[in-house]
Image (cartoon, rainbow, N blue to C red):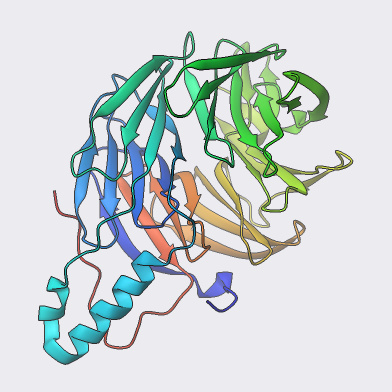
Length: 374
């Protein structure tokens, strides 16, 4: 694939649901987009067949989603399918759309809900059912992540704790204690030896997974404020991501808050140099009221983040400094997902639509993407 140009990103398809969406994630093969919704379900959209499947088992909203035992990344399954389908379409018209879909590789989805539960699912099954449920946190389980080797699941929540679990059976491994407030997000370092977590007040802890101790704290307090008028805290990392080489860590959220009750402020991302802990702050060039709800480092060297508030946006930065491009999304963005190969990104919309964008042009003679099937 040629080097992606953010300015050339185009809306590829819209995936509809009846309720507002909260989060979204591509599985590592790029075949499926999983989107969590305000009806307590996780919706699985098959980007090859157009099939839509509901994962039912949570009793509250889900925001955290991660994958274990996943297929190799960058398989290009969707792209290969589209090329083949386009070729048949050019020869046989819409009959090409009947091309049999390949069987997806097996993988596990782990999802986290507001009641503190983690649920394991066989993500590639025809009709996924809960494999196991773990009572992980007292209060909201805000985020979940899987180690690079796929063996360990990490979760965090409103009980101020980060907890580690075995990916294969859900058994407890260790609890990491030290945060003084709700833990909003977390991310494994790509080398698998360390874990970063961020709490409500923007304290980022760097955990050594061998010892279970935090060796240092990083300062993302720009993403927190105590509103004296409403006597309430607002903040935390609404998204966290390491760059692929582990040299940078990003924490995204809201800053310059003037009203904690209504969430009035501006989106921002604090990007740390992982070696020395020094930080840069990324902000949109445009005036925008809202929160950054998703962040990703693209393999091509730029960063992107999604935000919602007074509309929906996706912002792009080059070298973590220069604002390159801004994309208007048709609804408030509540999460952002980047496919493992960097060919697509998706935004979870507050209107119940997941918007899937691509950096590539449509193959010549390609039929329109199949709409979701219920």
